[in-house]
Length: 98
Image (tube, rainbow, N blue to C red; front, side, top):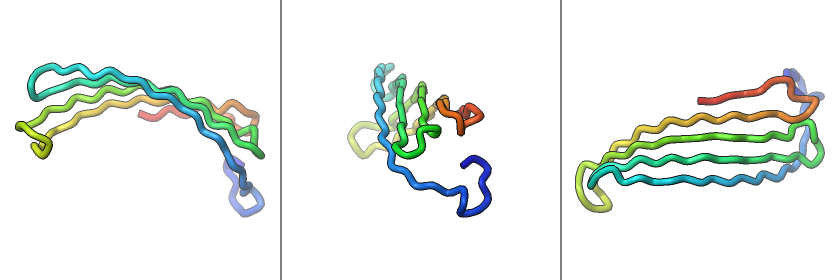
């Protein structure tokens, strides 16, 4: 349970998680690329229906490769934004992660 401080507030449950991710990679040049992606997910608990969650997110990744071949070093820069919405009575807040 939220903000529980002892074993009385702990509960076990199994859950099912489903999600899908789609993206698009754009080759900007010989050594650099840009990737955009989005994801949608759902988590459903069997014994604790108040903890079900819906997730939505987007991301962007820039990659620069410092050479040619599979072992050439590369640098990556990523930006991610995800939102999770608890859809039950036991959840009293929305959480956002960046």
